[in-house]
Image (tube, rainbow, N blue to C red; front, side):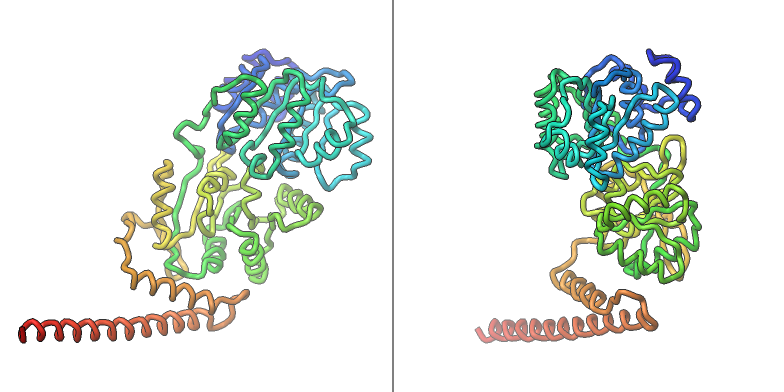
Length: 451
């Protein structure tokens, strides 16, 4: 359905069309009619579904050129808030031209105070900076605000912003409150219900947690060095724009250094970067300066990097919900994308958990420097004996002890030697154990004969 079918200002419809927004996504067609009526909402929507415009359009449609603060959008990170601000500014500049203020850390407080004194119509902010300026210093009144949007609600809660949100809502008189999140945090939903009375969660996802535009792949790496597999992946598939996800900041930095040392020009998105460097890196990524960007999960939450053709997870995230956030970076709107994950047999239990959540994987195997399709499904192995588990732990420990920051000549041989030594010691131990058990059995048999 097209935006012009609803009660939206024709000038805004024309502006949307000018910027390529003609047909609504599923979440927009379901949310826009309610939001345009000023309804409070609790919306569960997956990433890449177009939810940002489902609340931005009604807000812009309602804003007036008056010296009053009319709407507030809160986002958990500076990057996400900046992205929402950029979307709003592009539409606003060709539409009403009202004053929109971006509030986030890393910018001069004095500049923010000056802008606030001019009463912007819309503020897009992170809760930390909002608290510092508007709540603690009471620079401007909240009473005129008619709409509050809480975007990526679960991340807002995880980041410790509940008290700021609660304090903000308490300062308002009967506002429209709209909560959007990939997963609905009950504590925050209860707060919205308490303030507005709305209880029903609009579940856009239903049983589908990922976009139909994303194809999911598993790559069996057989306990090989995963950094080397990532480099082979880049050479083999030559992706247009690849986002590589690691589960820790330490691993992100190590992979970044490894690929850079191999001569690749790599983008880096991690919480370890200071605010100014992170802002500069996002700008370079969006300017298509990199073919490959290595990221921590901070970049998986709501950030819209255009034209991501492929996502590669070096391993499954600790929190499986982040698998869907990662995969949601590609296949956005009408584009197709691929989500790859490196795994080995130790990950089969995790694979089954993700499949139970509705993901259908195609399978590849990496062997001899090549990626090839696998048609036969790999089933989970039978439960390991305590001795087998002990051997696996010792093998992993031996491999970890031989691992260095940079892959040096002879590294694979050292790993093989270390593994063989562990297996040889384990075999000796098992042989000795077997001999002892046989002796005990013979002794018991002799005792039975004598009696």
